[in-house]
Amino acid sequence: MKTIVPIFFSVNDAYAPFLATALASIKENASKRYTYAIHILNDDISDANKAKLLAFADNDFRISFYPLTERLQALPGVKKLQEHCFGAFASLTIYFRLFIPDLFPEYDKAIYLDADLIVPGDISRLYREHLGSKLVAAVADYSIQKIAPFMQYIDAYVGVDHKNYVNSGVLVLNCKRLREENLCGRFLDWVQKYGLETVAPDQDYLNALCWNGIQYLDPSWNAMPSDCLTCLDDPQIIHFNLASKPWLNESVPYDNLFWHYAAKSGYEAQIRTRREMFLRDSAAVRAYKGGVKKLIRMAIRLTHSQQSFRSIIEAKQELRLCS
Image (cartoon, rainbow, N blue to C red; front, side, top):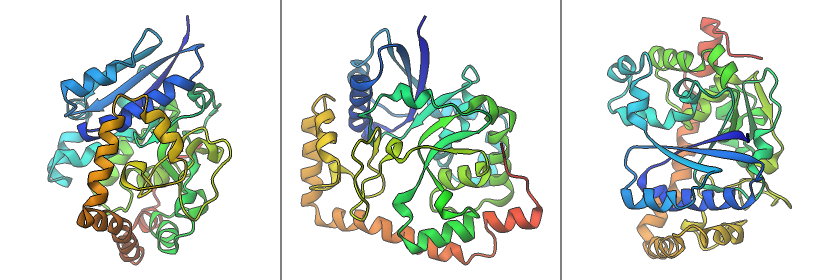
């Protein structure tokens, strides 16, 4: 019997074409010695898009869809948290990856992936990463390590050395240990008590709560395109995070690989049309490129806040999760 490799995504209908591109890359390059269980949490994927995504499925590449809101509402404490801390329940969905261990107790280990990536490497190698007693495995987020306001924000507000701050778009989760350490419960408690603003909500909480239980992966497992970074020779996962997305730019690093798998996604024409329409809309381009600047302004403001992850830990003597 083949070992099952559970892989989780959380997407909306608009991201179905990019999820299909990610799935095409995973299936093409993954070892045939394993069975892959693809879990797609969503609330609004159309039947037509579900059918196109299910076209990738076979006996060793299983695809399942789950209603995200319904799953989250089943967690203890979530309804109370929603009433007190969030105006809309959807606010919690961005934290989905933090809830995986509790939502799927049948797994002791799992992979979480953002949908804006491709996997030219063998994903089973990532799953075989030995975690020991570590809580998660991830790659340090070097894409922000040349942007001074972000580095200062991470050091002063999140309370983590920016050199050790990880990107949450590619994670190997030690689900068993995370349940033992009650990551879900601690997160819900922090949000209810403090309701902190964050530049990168799930990522900041993950780093603040798990900082001493992180296993650092080789950067090839989360290669993040950037004009100021050197491209890797053999990236295993390419994560088109922030503004570096092939479907919103004329050219970005590694985009030849993206279009290789987009051609196998069943959505290539739709993705190219979307890019052309976007690039012709000058207002949309300005707004999108201004998004990073907006985050930088937010980081600068929060860096000088009196209440932060760091101040709460120091004042309340909170114990972070550790290995």
